Length: 92
Image (cartoon, rainbow, N blue to C red; front, side, top):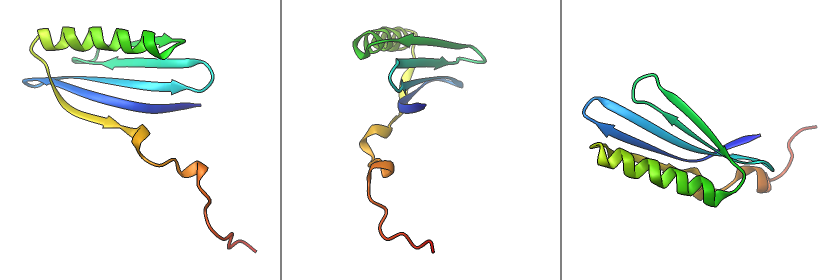
């Protein structure tokens, strides 16, 4: 099972690069870098520190190339509906 933890959108003019950090339950993390254009790279990590280090290096490279952070989404802040009680079961 995969869960998108967070995503970042960097833009420069009409170009964009999206980074997505995905939790791979029990096996680590995946960092997907999409853009600019049709390019797409995927990196897999067994620990969070290695993933964050690689991501930080890539973000610094984007900023050096003139990209800026346009949007950020941290899905981990939202409540996990799978772990909450759903109330009375109305099925008969």
